[in-house]
Length: 265
Ligand SMILES: O=C(O)C(=O)C[C@]1(C(=O)O)C=C[C@@H](O)C=C1
Image 1: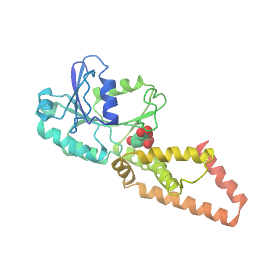
Image 2: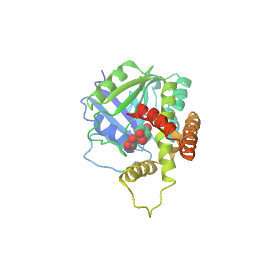
Image 3: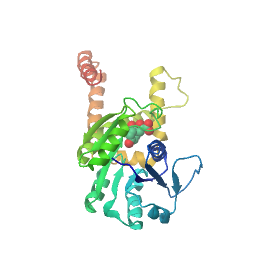
């Protein structure tokens, strides 16, 4: 396993912080976090935070987990790779929400990788109790690190899935883009003077969460090349619904609802 390994985490943002804190609870694993902003020092941590690439190079990591924002993931990798020796012995890891760029990066440089996607975050998940949340591993990931992270996530009672890079991105065009788009469409019709019903308030709370996400994250999820096809599907459903409403066709509505109930219930 990973005893006596030195893990470098790139980025001390929302997910980087969580991984640093949780992974540093494991014995015999040394953790350093590299963050260009180098903000938020606290002596009580079990890990070191630095913005000094010399320190990173001296640390001589055996594994690098990239938790930088999606739009900086590749730049952050390149910056580190240029400044450390011994690259051939390092396994590269990422938690990117869209895998296309990291896939190309690993292939281009012929790197050993472990790539996964925690399908949760501090906006909506209870980070203190992740039971039932999901994580997707990418096939082809380096076996010992794959096993290490699988057993790490098992402790949090997460559901574990495995997909290829391409299967993953195809699924994200749907499982992230569709709810994001739905929330944006809903937010476009929100008026602060509304007296909300319970359903409205629930939608509003989700829309608020989505809109509080970083614009870079939202753009990377929406600009996934497969998202446009999903918008096409949403549009045709809307057109169909509009037709049903305009013709007040209850029978057709029953069929439509029955299909939707079948999808979700
Ligand atoms: O921050 C959260 O609560 C999330 O749920 C994050 C969320 C999502 O909206 O589903 C967003 C991006 C991810 O890569 C995975 C999950």
